[in-house]
Each structure stands twice: as structure tokens, then as C-alpha cells.
Image 1 (cartoon, rainbow, N blue to C red):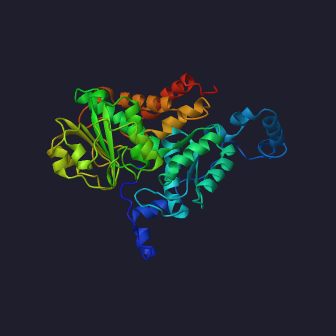
Image 2: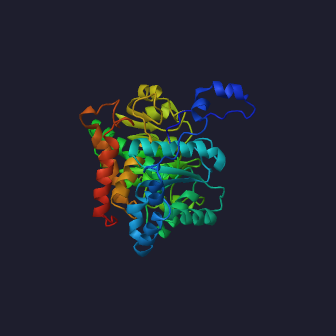
Image 3: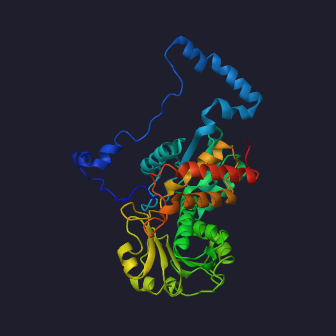
Length: 404
């Protein structure tokens, strides 16, 4: 669900190199977008003897004797691995690890720019779930956190859970939790703007993939009144026999109104539409929603319903995943601050409490600027990452997962 690339257009492999070089997107990517730099001087023989042999052996021995020193004397305390298998990249699908690398480089760039965190893109040529998990676990000792990216559902749920069970550093699948944090923050402010509490809202979610399930869980935990989620076959409910384990678990905690029909049927009278799929939503269905409705149409590059159409149909607050409309739901608002806060206290994982705290802090950044055009801060608002970081660190201590 990463939203920093606005138009993931498939470029024909036969495109002439000269044509690519004339394209500013290709020009920017030539040679890659990130590089490794030195954090210490390396000019003299003394510098070399301190940074490498023989001096480095003393540091290695100290870490062997006291493993926690690895955070103090290596990059581990400030470095994240951005890991993918290339199976669910942007809106492009299963394009493989090499084609996923430009996105992972971009994610690493965002970590550094917005969170001051070094990140290494790692694209793995493996899709077997057990092998993928084993590979990530074996990579983990060199990093202070693992950001899972663009791994297809439902495998992504198992990968995150099983990797986190085996490592003592935060493991965070951004397509799930980054999206959920930003959506919840925006929904908090949209509810406030329209004079409602979260508990007053009936929400319908279009899309039951990784993002749809994670968003739905998180806003239910935050206290939303009721929620129904739809996949390509209709509303997810407990009597369906075709549900995955994740969807079946979710069906037991949602849809108190017991909808069993189509997504459009459930939307009638609903307060909130959350679009997390590529499916289109008829304008008439938006018009059937409650007064002062809230529409987050987050498919990229084409929202489930065009923002102008949604407004004309009666929606008071509209958000998308695009930067050329107000209220951009962009994961970069969440993950830099989440990792910054978690790593600052050497948290062993990211808890539900830490994610909820991140959403509250992100919503609070809007403050007095709250309006129909501003229910979520700009990605370039310099207050975002520090606010989330502080809230996440406090929540980690409260939840007992902080080691500092």
C-alpha cells in the first residue's frame, strides 16, 4: 500500500534507451537513489587501525562478552532492513525481487530523509514461506528493525508473525500497519470535524487484503462503532465457507449488523467508506451514505471513486492516496516515526499500543488546521516523525517491551 509512487505505469521492455533517458523518472533513477557513506574519518593509517584491524578486534571481543554492546558500537541501533520478495509491489503485483528494488531503494530513502534512520533494501529471490522466514531471521542480527514490504497476502500475515516470534527486534509489515496508523489518524480527525466520536461511526471497507484487514482491526480496537469489510465476493461474514484463516478470524470480531450481501448494499446509510482495493465504487452508492459522510478512496493511481464525484455525492471529507488532492493517506507519515521511537528505546517489537499511540500523535499534529481539506498532516510537516517517535517510545515503555 506504499503511496509515494503516484503512477506505477508499466514501461514496455522494448522502449528505446534514448526514450528512457529523456524521461525524468528514469533520469533520476539512473545509478540508484541511495548510497553508503562513512560515519567516521578514514584518512590516515591511525584511522585505519582504529576502524579496522587491529582496533576492531577489541570491539568484537567486547560484544561477544556482552551482546547488548552491539547497539552501542555498530550501526544496529539506527539501521533497518527493508525486505521484500517482490510478490505484491505497488499496484504492479508479483514482479519479482529485481523489479522491486527501485521501490525498496525509495523506501530506504524515505527512512533516511523523514526519520534519520539508515535502511538497506533487501530483495530476496525466494517465495516459499518457510524459506522466506528463515532467510529474514538469518539476516536479522545485523539490523535494529525489519520493515517487511510488498509481500503478498495472506502469506504476509504468517511471515510477520513467525519472524517476530524468532527475533527480538521490531518487525513491521508497513503495507498493513503503516496504512492502518495513517487511516486511523485521519479518521479520528474526520470524525471530530463532523461532530462524531469513533464509536458513532459505521464503517464499510472495500478490500480484505493485508491493508484492509489491518486497517479494520486497528480501527475496531480504537473503538469504532461497527465495521463490515468486503472482498471480491461480497461482505465478509462468519457463514461464508470460502474465507482464509485471517478473514475468518476477522469475521468473528466485526459486522455486528450482520450484513451478508454486496459491498454496495452495506454502504447504504454508512458513515465511512474506506477504499483499499482496485475496485470501483458507484457514485450512487456514495450518495446513499449518511449525512456528512467520510470517504477515503485510497487506490493508486485511480481512486475507487473520484474525489470530485464523492463530494458531489454528499461526502464531506474525502481522502486519497494521491498527492494532487487534499488529505493524502501516505505511509511515510507513519513508519519513520514508528521505527525511530521503537529503536530509540530498543523495543523488542511493535505492540498494538504503540501503533495506537502513533495514530493519536499523528492526528494531534493537525491541531487548529483541522478542516475538510486537512484531516491529516502533510508528509513534509517536520513535526510528524518526532511526535510519533515520542508517543511510540512512551507506549513501548508502558507495554513493557522497551530496553532503555
